[in-house]
Image (cartoon, rainbow, N blue to C red):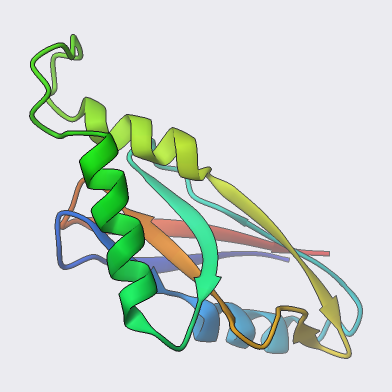
Length: 131
C-alpha cells in the first residue's frame, strides 16, 4: 500500500511531528507485522526521529543546524539561494524505515517521527509504503 501525506509547513525551518499521521496510515493498512517506509520527495526537506517530550530538543537541533550551515554564506554557488536547505536535507536524510509489530509502529517510548522543513513555509508531501 502506497499512501501520500500532505503537509503545509508554517516556518522557514521547523520539525513537524508526523507520528500520528503515520500511525493512522499503519492502522488503515491492516498490516500486523511488516515495515513502514517513509520518503520525502523534496530536496530541501527531510525526515528524522528524535525525542517527543521536550520541545527544546527540536529547537536545539534546528538551532545547531542553522549555526553550522549558515543560510547567508556568501560562498554558495547554487543560483536559487537555498543551498543551506539542500545541505541540511542531505545531512538529515530523505527516508526512514520503521518496523510494524502487532499493527503498531515500533518506535521507542521517547521517539516520534518528524518532517524536517528547511525551506518553507510551503506545501509538502510524504510518501508512505507499508509492506
